[in-house]
Amino acid sequence: MDLSKYVVRYGTMRNIGVMGVRGSETYRRGGEVIVRSNRGLESGQVLCEATEGSMQHLEHAPSGQIVRRLSPDDAKEVAQLDQTRQTKIDVCQKHVDQLKLDMKLVEVEQLFGGERLVVYYLAEDRVDFRELVKKLAGEFKTRIEMKQIGVRDEAKVLADYGDCGKPVCCNTHLSTMPPVSMKMAKLQKATLDPTKISGRCGRLKCCLRYEFDTYEEIERQLPRVGSRIVTRDGKAKVLHQHILSEQLLVETEDHRRVLIPASEVLSVINQSKELE
Image (tube, rainbow, N blue to C red; front, side):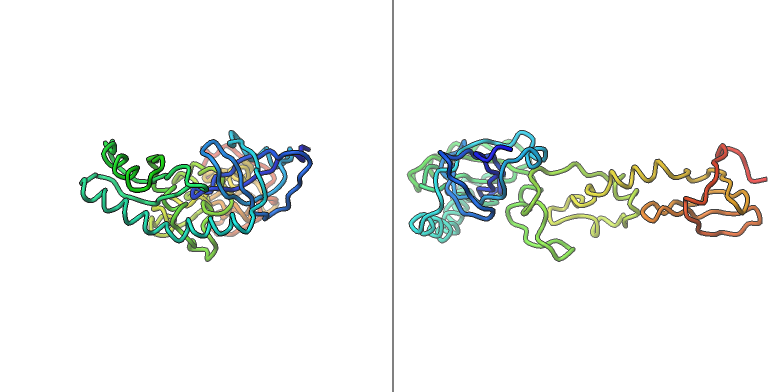
């Protein structure tokens, strides 16, 4: 366990990095700090110590250094940056409109200390924003960085609560966006109505990924639909799997449909055979 490093969340995109410390300084969970990332000075929040366990969940996490605890003066500067954020967005949007650029402005982030201004945007095609960068550099007298993002990242920046009533996962604990497919929704017997299984980003909900591996593992252990099985009460045919409860809907030899625990299956016969 390396107590000289901490996991810190920082920046508008809520990046999660592994930050070293100077000397023997220690920090508590939730502590507000100033860090030096690969972008410059930023304000952040300590999440935990960088233990072997926590590092297993952080592949390719950016590194940096905790410079100091957030001081009252630092807090004032952070508050000032937040207060002027909307003005910067309005100025940027004005220039985007004047230049008639085919892009959607999502967010503007001023790094701590004014070292650079990051402009987040959505665009279907390549955008020539050289003139925009010149105008913004002239307005704000700092380095301008244009950052193209996707719709999931847009939700990460702007979304608040999901259908579950809790803060959206991408804005809280997710460090990377997991791949999600319709197969996951089908296996978990979720409704296939796109309006009900889509998140704030308009894409499939990330939470469909969370229990998918468990569903897959249980499904592999259950007799497949169409299989002929033998139970203490005789032979039957599997009509449907209730994966999470590990139950089977079966049709018995006398054509009754009953729900049985998978544990009652004594053996599985080749599913290509018909009921006798």
